[in-house]
Length: 472
Ligand SMILES: [Fe+2]
Image 1 (tube, helix red, strand yellow):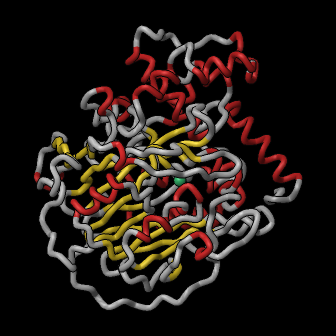
Image 2 (cartoon, helix red, strand yellow; image 1 turned 45 degrees about the vertical axis):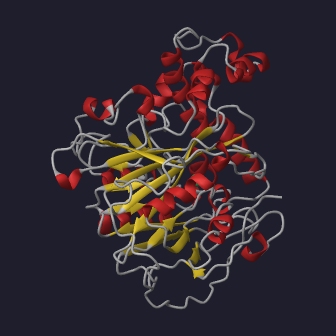
Image 3 (cartoon, protein in one colour; image 1 turned 135 degrees about the vertical axis):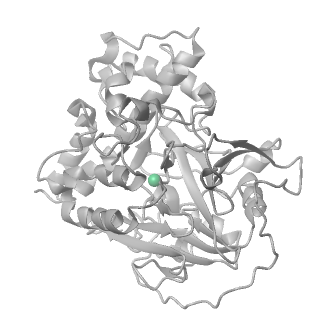
């Protein structure tokens, strides 16, 4: 059974009185050493900046104790989520003293390369308490990082109905029993509709556009689309704007694709995926997937691990977005990857199965974000990098290839000029990913080879045939 949760009812939303932090931890969290030097070392590296305001400190959580990464998770239908047993957490201080991201690896399938990072974002509110967006697996390492940040979690916010995020909401919330738990409306489970309490989630209430307990500091905009799959699936996502840090938070609506891999992805996985004799490429050729047995591969050998890792990331990004891209683009990923890199992109599976049917609703939500939050300094999604204004810094990215915190694609495209397809403010970049929504038939321009959509289109045709999604 899909480990998903249900919470379609609008629950009572009692306004909690402001709470006094149990412990005053209002010091720059990552800048000071955590309590236990052998448990968690927060390695900070300052990204080159020109002013204090722009300082971004990235920190990686390094635990010597593998047991603190242990987290058993066997779930996911039709594809199991991985890792099954152990999850490393990478911590980045995105805005000094205000916003942190905690990332873990997350993939689907059976070690075929469909993997990327999943991100939890933590905002420190004005009273020092923490607002947690899209919680991740509460490993010992993850919890130690939260303790170092401040530890007093006031709100756990599940901003989506997508199961790769909600499976962690219950376990995470149980670690912070005093926190309020708010969930996106439209939660579902399959094949039986079961209440969120069945999955260990005891929500304080459901997220709405207004009247949220955090609204003096964080604005909320809800995208709720009509149900699909005979009422068994609903796409809902809440976008947020944290005023003090000028940060927009979204979950899955669009991701920012970078040329560098997430720090949390193991280098060995990238090297193996990029190598001509790696497991996935060998399987592709053995099965002759879409005629791939005799197609040319990337110009790289196992003797060049850096080259393999770069090719591996391009393949991994394509797998993560298209699930089963065309064989020629798996083998030589440059062209398809270039179509995505340096831009926000609506994930093809989200577009094909859901968004293309509800253009008006999606456009209304995106336009509202562009209108009201256009001055934001960054857009933080739940996957792939954070898109920053100015130098387009990517906390948590590029470590494998040195200090590649600036995307070379930005320079190629004019470094942020409004006329450049890849440029503009972070919110402008985000909204541009939805240009197709104002048209009748165009697929996102970032999908440069429609052959990459063939597998998803097959699924979509079947879904239309059985009337699980609209036919028009
Ligand atoms: Fe997601």
